[in-house]
Amino acid sequence: MEILQIVGLGLIGATLTLVVKPKSPQIAFLLSVLVGIFIFLFLLDKISAVFAILQQLAEQAHVNPVFLSTILKIIGIAYIAEFGASIVRDAGEDSIAQKVELAGKVLILVLAVPIIQAILQTILQVLP
Amino acid sequence: MKLFGSICLFLACTGYGLIRARYYRERPRQLQQLRLALQGLETEIEYAQTPLPVAFVRIASRINGPVAGLCAFVGSELAESSRAVDEIFKTAFTKFDQQLYLTKEDREVICLLAATLGISDRKDQLKHLKLASSNLHQLEQRAAEDRTRLEKMWNYLGPLLGALIVVLLY
Amino acid sequence: MIGSDSIDIVFQVAGIGVLVAAISAIFKSVDKDEFANWTTLAGVIIILFIIVNKVGELFAEIRQVFLIH
Image 1 (cartoon, rainbow over the protein chains, first blue to last red):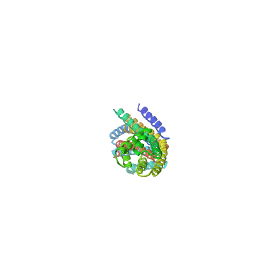
Image 2 (image 1 turned 90 degrees about the horizontal axis):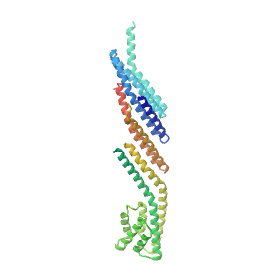
Image 3 (image 1 turned 180 degrees about the vertical axis):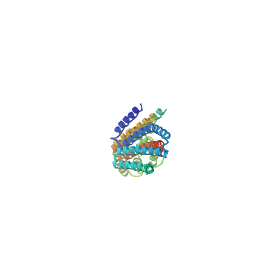
Image 4 (image 1 turned 90 degrees about the vertical axis):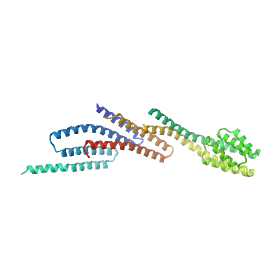
């Protein structure tokens, strides 16, 4: 039951953050970042397992490996941008958080351009 | 093993804090003793006109603490050697360095006084004695102020610092 | 898996936070505000060191998992 561990870590982290916060808000913020990092590290193990299966499926279906790696990168960028933005938002810097999210969106778009190109080319080939 | 080391570190830091606190606790008291000694010297010179060596030994028997040891040492040195009074005080300060919780400023006041002792007439010496006494009084008041603030601070700071280092290394 | 070392680090950081806050409160109570500020700053830097290590670990793992080289 790993969810229990996660919830326990979150509860303990939240309690400790509450204890430290009135005395020194900076350290409380760092503490919450640390808890977030640990939870994310834990999740990464699970995500990598899922990705391994996805890769296996892609190989069986003979999908171009470039596409798969691009999609994985896009998912990764989405997760990382979300994580970073939420941390920055915790610190009370909403404007910077919005910029981080914007950067994530733009980078995803950049990565998606080759795929869009390939789709368009396929469509043009199919069309007479 | 780790626990043992942590406990040692914590106790050492606590002890250091207590020692620093004792410095602030003892300094006003020793300054007061020193001032009492100077007053005693004043009476000896003004009314009894005792020679300095005898006067110092007599004062030493009247007060207590490390200052008494200082006075006794100065008295016996004065009787035996023919060095100047301020030199003898300097050697006495280095000898009793460990027991005296006095700052450089406090010692300077005494050394300045010692330089005038025994080389001029009675009136002049008494004037200098009074000056040194009032200087010491000022220093004493400041030391008492420091004591109320810093003694408590070091008492808490020692254990806290120890705990911090333990947590950092754990 | 969340190892026991991770909860240890969380507790360590919380302990440092509490102690640093207490020390700076003591300094502040004896009118040594600059020392109080330095203590807080030192505490934040120490914790930042711990966290930067962990962030580096996290980013390395992210790169590995999401095939970003």
